[in-house]
Image: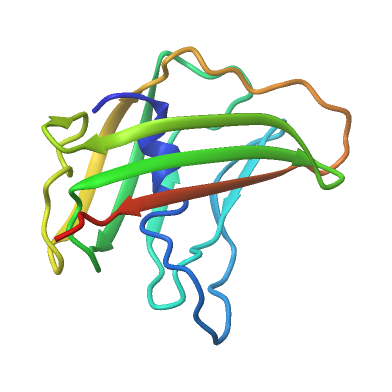
Length: 151
C-alpha cells in the first residue's frame, strides 16, 4: 500500500452527495493518552470498519491498519481531500490522488461494485506529522471524491 493516505481514505470512502436519515455512529480508530482518532461514515447508506493499531502523536514510517467494507461503486478514479479545522477555520489542507485511471496506487483501485474490501496490514507514512495543539478540540474533515467517467 502507498501511504498514510490509505488510512485517511477509509474515513470517507465514496462520499455520495445528499441523502437523508440518521447519521452513523462515531467510531474510535485508535486512542492513547496523547491522541484519539475518531471517524464517522459520511455515506448515508453504509458504515465501515477501520482501526489503527499504533496510536501516537509521533507517527511511525509504517502504520498497521484494519479496514473492512463492501463497495457501493466501482473504483476507477478516486481522490482524497483532507482539511484540519480549528474553530471553523481551516489550518491544513491536503489533496491526494488515490486511484487515477491507468496509474493505480493501491490494490483496491479497479475493484467493482459489490466486492468486499478487507485489508489488514501496513501503510507507509509519506512524512505527515501530527501538529502540536493546545487542549482545544480539533476537527478533521476528509472527503473521498469518486470521479465518474463520462460516457
